[in-house]
Image (cartoon, rainbow, N blue to C red; front, side, top):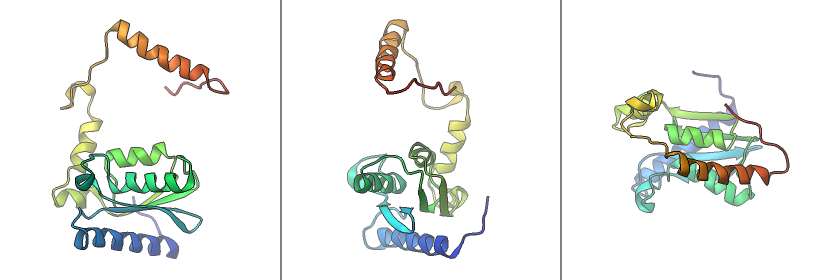
Length: 168
């Protein structure tokens, strides 16, 4: 899905691509970067830090969201735009959804990324499979332990200021 980017979008994306280039050339990281922008101001920035932090979730987009959250003191960004050097992997895309980012602009596609050996496209395909066909074996707990886990959720929901709306 392509769109017409305005001048500001082009400038932020070009800046973001340069951040990913510096991450590779100056820091020896994988070439991924992301920024979170609100009202024309960069409020969060990240590069892939998976290897240095030994953290498989330390992708550029997640690091940019963490940076924005730390600086702004909040975890939801309904007023932000995420710019990323390439199409986010499934984890990072879901992180954008969790953060309620309304707009995401990226350079390279997941097909481009796959060309250079990254698994993003495979993971998108894997996640689209029914649970019984995925390579990760997922198991729900037996009744007693499940009931205990659900009880904790019920107690949490009871502490909220308004009733919970189920999201089925």
